[in-house]
Amino acid sequence: MRTRPPRALLLDLDDTILVYGPLGEDVWEAVTAEFAPRLGLEVASLRAAVREAASRYWAEPERSRQGRHDLRGARRTICLWALQALDAPRPERAAAMADAFHDEREARVDPLPGALDALEHFRARGLPLVLVTNGGPELQRRKIERFGLAGFFEAVLVEGELGFGKPDPRVFEQALAAVGVAPEQAWMVGDNLHADIQGAQAAGLHACWVDASGSGTPHLHGIQPTATVRALVELREWL
Image 1 (cartoon, rainbow, N blue to C red):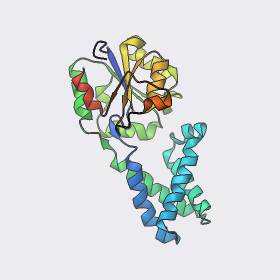
Image 2 (image 1 turned 120 degrees about the vertical axis):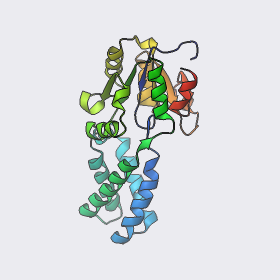
Image 3 (image 1 turned 90 degrees about the horizontal axis):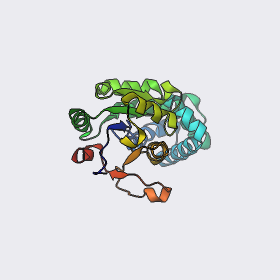
Image 4 (image 1 turned 180 degrees about the horizontal axis):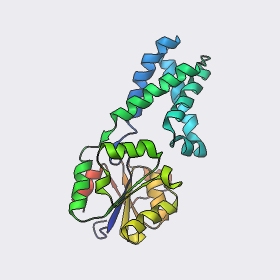
């Protein structure tokens, strides 16, 4: 990796620049603790039902793709499924619980430690950056605006605006075209082994996996990143 410095970086947003995924567990704990008494349910039972419903919802690829474009609606469906599983099908309470989770989780989003400094460093080195994020345009653009991220990037590519996203090769082609480099001259940096790492490598790019948990197990998925870091800020040492 040190011997092949990139001429451009493609960067993921959630859990690469901004904390997102790890927020869910704590927020669900708080929300189910609040709503279980109102529904006459045990907190543990409600939390388990939500966990099972979420797992089932996101396991289906096409539903998952559609759901990340309408996260509020997806979360309402998950909560309704959970209440149905507990014989407490209350659509209005399911919607209220889902909305409480949605609003609190989005409010807790924040830059990961050192991430904005890393972006400043990359730009100071003259390295072109492209933001490549899956998800719906409303939430993704809101986060980008909230933290003033757009100014760091030559282009911002959002799945919900393009009609396709990672790992579709078209999104990598469009990102490369925005900065005028060949695939082998660019690195994709992200936390998702399938969408970010495997997708980029299939398109001919190098790929750096952000392994925040330190699990270090990409080989279990048959995927070998070009490099692995615990956080975006670690790339400052190499670039």
